[in-house]
Image (cartoon, rainbow, N blue to C red; front, top):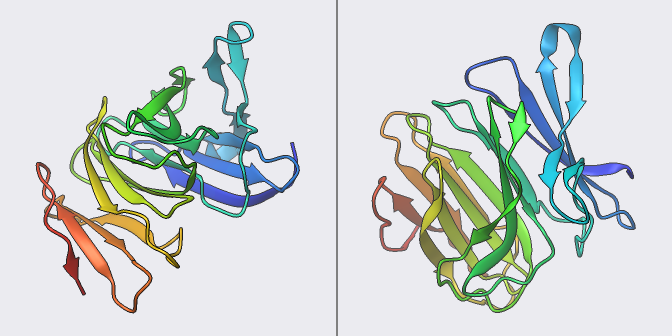
Length: 223
C-alpha cells in the first residue's frame, strides 16, 4: 500500500475499540483500514472484508479504483446502541437511479467480523451517472440510526438514512450547480433530541440546511 494522505476515524461508544480508514496517494488510489482492538497494549489489526470474486476469502483492500485521492470518499461510524460499525466508501462505479456508487460493510461486535460489501442504493435519486467524490456520516446519539451525505462529480448532493439494517429516506439536497464545491456538505445530530442537521452550499454566500426529525425531512432553508 502507498502512503496514506487522508485519514478518517471513529471510536466505539461501548468499548475501547477504534477504527481508522486511509486513502493512499495518487498512483495507488487505495482505501484500507485498521482497527485498534485493545488500546492498553496498542494492538492493531487490518480490516479484512469478505470477498466472492475472484475466489472466496477476505481482502484488506476496500477499493483501488478511486478516480482521485484528493477527496473524503470514505467514512466510518459506530452505531450508538449496538456498537456495530459501518464502513462506507466510493467503489468507482457511476451513480444512477438505483445505485450511488458507494459500497458499505457492517462490522458486528464492533469490528470483529465484517459483512460482504453491498451497494448503497440511491432509491430513485437521479445521480447523473457520476462518481461520488465526498461523503460524511454522523451517528444518532440515542439510536442506531445514521445519516450519510454525499456529493458527486456533478456536485449533486444528497442524504440517506441508515436505520441500523438498511438505507432509506433519501433526500436530494440539490441538483447540479455550476461553480459549487464538492466538499460543502456535512451532517450532525443534536445530542438531546436526536434530530439531525444537514448543511450544504450552492455556490453562493449563504448556508442552506435541512433537518431530519427521525421520520421526515424539512424543507430547505437559508441561514
